[in-house]
Image (spheres, rainbow, N blue to C red):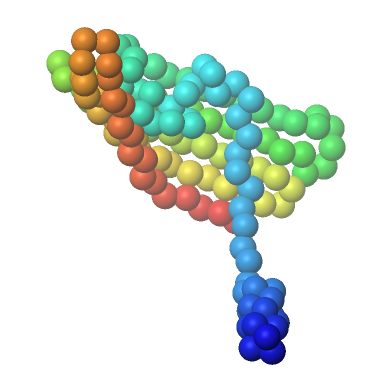
Amino acid sequence: MKILKKLKIVFLIGLFSIGVNAQQSSLYSQYIYNSSLINPAFMSMDEYSSVNVMYRYQWVGMPGAPKTGVVSFYTPVGAGNTSLGTIISRDEIGVDSDTKINLLLSQNVTLGDNSYLALGFTTGIGLFI
């Protein structure tokens, strides 16, 4: 019993001694108009090219208020079920700013007459200041 108690104490000390880092995720209230922001696989379900520009400014007039701007583009490639896209975003909250450029790839696989599997991949670079 003493060993179990000691293990609990060591676990709790270890748990609270680990450094924790976090980041603020961008907030998109109108993602329904640009689902590729949340899920890049969505691009392969669309038959047309799409360009979206969004800007969100919360708490207008308050210093350090969150601001988010996004420009995105995606298009089907050739006659296949593949789509390519890009997302450029800038997020400012207080003195912090986050700028990202992401490249997106999605593939639509037909499983049956009315069944599809959409796969998506995102990669990118970001600058957090």
